[in-house]
Length: 122
Image (cartoon, rainbow, N blue to C red; front, side, top):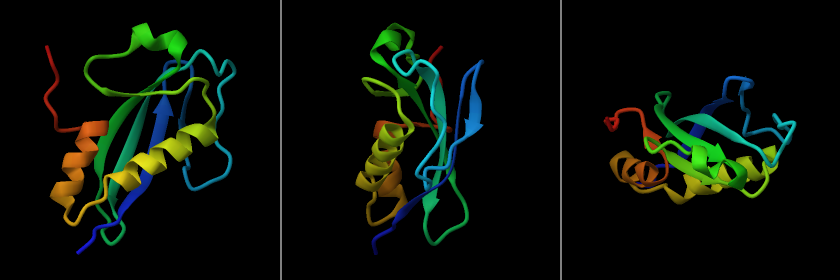
């Protein structure tokens, strides 16, 4: 039985900018300097038929901020930030992780996103 994944909620933020992100919309938060982006994106992902979610994190960076990437999380590196590029990338990655069971999907999601239950490195 195929389990369709569903991105139920997303939040992006750093010290200067933080907002809920609606990946179902056509417009979303933009950055004043799209070449200079580094922020943590939280994604709450579950299955279409269930209400629960699991929490995942990924750091979004542009090439100017490559040295600021955290080793504790996964990364999305985009050449220049735009909401549309980030939304399309996140939706494609999540769709590519869909498998027959949640455990199989979780295994794929953990390859691309940091899962809330993964131990942090010291």
